[in-house]
Image 1 (cartoon, helix red, strand yellow):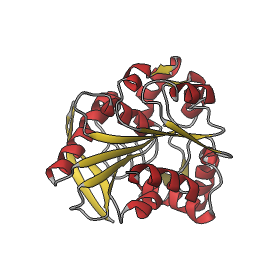
Image 2 (spheres, helix red, strand yellow; image 1 turned 135 degrees about the horizontal axis):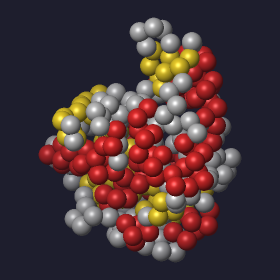
Image 3 (cartoon, helix red, strand yellow; image 1 turned 135 degrees about the vertical axis):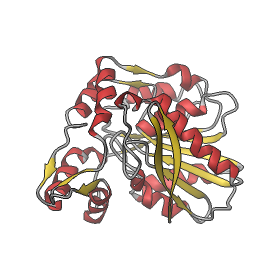
Image 4 (cartoon, helix red, strand yellow; image 1 turned 90 degrees about the horizontal axis):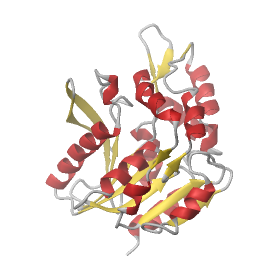
Length: 284
């Protein structure tokens, strides 16, 4: 695994974007993985490890998360900026010789992938939507809004890990090593010794403005022409089952895979979850 950076442009200037790069950098088959609202690229380490022999895997830290720069203007934490940054990443990948680009997006990353894949002449060949769909209920956003941007700090890493296990419990059953991995890569230690989450609390400002009503994405969804795999935690409140079933009858009519005992969102760390993604991306 290699760590790299590229430049993005926002309303106040340039910012650096961090990403991890797995597999052969000359491989013309590339999959881009993008995380959820408060997460970062290291969520995909196990998936990337399972794919890197056949595919080049590029995992992005969206601006304000992980090791990417925080944006000077919080209003830029929105999909037009994320689409511009993702386009810069795609441009770098294609300049290096990529001929096929697939997309794996969890929650926010899936919405971003849907918006990009719906555009004319999109380079995205296949799309994996991980626990996100065409209707995002305002009630689920209200639940997420209870912790996003609250910026708690902790006296020890153990206390922070306990917090991560609590707010991320819907990810489903994970091993102690997997929880430790998520906590390690979603945190940082301040100069005063206390531990905090490694995302800009200001990402919550535009998010809270969108919480007043359901988010509807039927228009870009029905513009998709690529094969789509739809993953859903069986207990998810972000992707209601009735919405997922309706999606299988409209637009690209994706194959739906549900994971019992999981809410929002499948962490893509369990063997069955990784297998579902791998089989879809490597299918003839």
